[in-house]
Length: 456
Image (cartoon, rainbow, N blue to C red; front, side):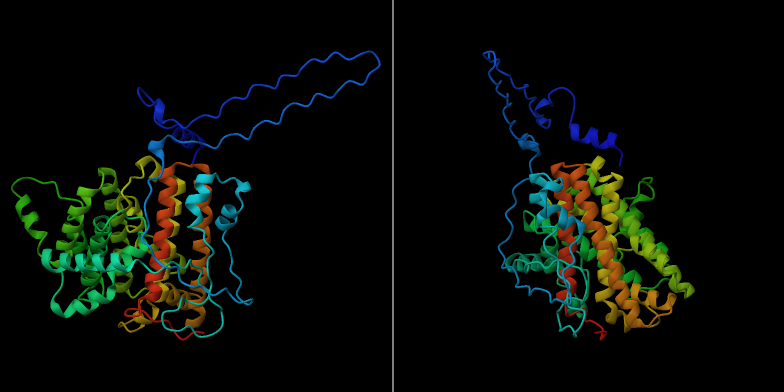
């Protein structure tokens, strides 16, 4: 990120009628006047002490640029036992930066990011975790239980959409749909969503992405054979085909041929109506990344190839949760401008976030994937296979990889907030971090889907 780009962004809009949107410049202090005092011959001259200058005012933004006030749902914070002496909490650089304002954080950034860098918890490295416990040693931020009223309302509405609007699944899939707990997931990940309607934007897309993954790639009839063709046709439900009148009707009819395409089309229609063109295009781009990751994993499955660890991590940078946290501004009811989203520093922060939260999935779904036929690739398995270590050692090293990614995400988020203190950017960083925390909470507590291996 160049200083020129940052300077241009911080200057704000320019042109006729935009003066009121500029950041308020600090007033230039006049040099203190020194009073001339006549001193009698032989007397000691008094020392002139200039007045102490007032502290410079904080950077003040126009009210139009201020963060909107969002009333968070009331929820009781869970009681978190302090870590034992054997497992001290390791604070990320972001926590240190926020706790000590003298390091350069403005009051605005400190307020917004304080929640992001709340004290993290690492479970004790010894002792077998109980059902619903976090993975021992995993760096994470405990959160309050999602607001039960919002969870209930969202769960009801997303199920009505899935059954009544798009006929997503047959009756025999109902138990797994309910066990996924989409409502609880999305409420945990989007604490600043203004309404259930905003949460439904994320919930529909989440359900649609899982339908494609399950039906095209995984448990419910998925296969690597022919995956590219299926994904391409499904992607046109997100990124419409522009063709001639002769061939348009056939494509239009194809969008309702199977559940994944019906869910993609419906979820995207709702999203486009609620988002800006820039936000919709950003999401399409992220979904193209996701589909490319699906294809890489499928090619390895067809060839029975176990990638190198770095190759697997490269695939996971694309086949990951990135499309979910990057819509946090749409779900929050505001927009991160495209020029800010494209900053290389923010792109790195988003990539680190997506990578870290996807390793969370690898770790919590480890035992579930062991039950699938063949060798199911996840980070613990790839480390074990490629580095010739036991399954337990591979798993514990994967925990370390996750923790390193989380520390890098938090440190670079804080650095970016200091370098570019634009309210929408700072709020977006906070939203992405909240998504990571909610995603971990859902994985940890979703005992219908996940259980931990016996490695402690």
